[in-house]
Image 1: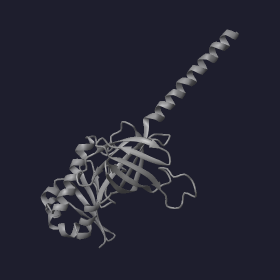
Image 2: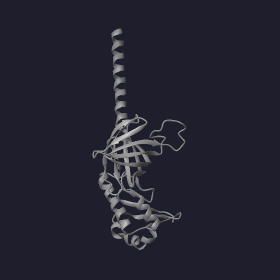
Image 3: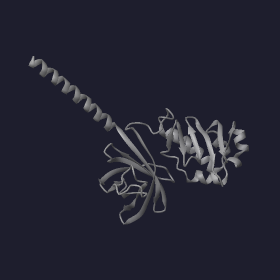
Length: 253
């Protein structure tokens, strides 16, 4: 009888350990992606950091707005600040920025509004100021845009970037190739549908106003915000679905 009880207890313990280990493995497989946009000296950059369940940075990358090419980052010392190294010899020394609402609590990715510090390489040193853009929780191996499209992140972003470049260049025919017609255009609280490439060309100046062009110019079409199966460019000047641009929100001005 005692032997059976011991055997049953052993099985319960083994089962509990299996469940516990599975839970730990699942937790380790989930990461937070923290994205920032800001400045290094006079250069605009974006940065994405990968943060585990304990709040520790495990890696990431940054990129310059003029080329959108990822530069890998390796995390170093972490405590009241974060040290990040790139493979080209650059080093970020960063600390969190609050907005006054943290009420004396230590700043972290959850209660800060960004990071600031310096970027250093050899004898060069530049101030860094980063604003937090978004935080998302995803499986470690998830594609960035898997909630939007089945194609690769690079292929999807290439089409968004082609539309972005065509708009800035005033290239109406090329821009139309990356639109999922009908395109919804929202302006001054009213919306309308642009149904064809010919209509897009005819109404180009009413859609891509100077204020709209400025909003495009300030956007960075890389590591973009995803919501409800769409991708947002900039602060919402345009939204994209799996087949191209679906909405343009014309700013006031």
